[in-house]
Image (cartoon, rainbow, N blue to C red):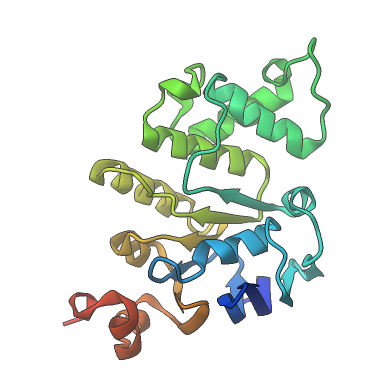
Length: 252
């Protein structure tokens, strides 16, 4: 197997007596889509929060691209190439789609924010931002306010903001959350197009989307990974079906 770009070893996090991460080991291989699934309260978002740096683990180590990043703050992890999307969109509703992406590009490249030189007016940033919007299918909405976009389009915008930041790893926290069937299908199609170009750690409750996208799947239950394997291995695991999937996901 290709060397891991993200390695988690012995990750542990407690809130009082509640163990939300229990000695987690996980490897994310370059250019794979690795899904983490599990019931509500299993600790999936807490895991993402520790990887991105929003929560400090009580024990364990996180390696990114060969570097120990366990103690690094969020912004330094972002500059190294870790980007996250949230369950709830985190865009600026009063700015256009292009301005949102340009701000993300500006922040990553270290440009200063100035009153007289808005990010969207800088030619190089604008070109990169438009390219990212094109990549996620939002080029025609570049000059629309984010507040005017549909929910699924705002999730696409958030993804464009991650892509323009030159991310090495995309941490996708329930990208289909709140979407209708058609929006979910569009997001799955978009992520399928990006598959193989970007490394993704996917947290998702939509099992149809998970099985359509994932190269490997880890199952998290009560803060512990009970299984990791290919989609077919996870689908046919009696332990996984009992703990989470149910018999309806067993292969014929």
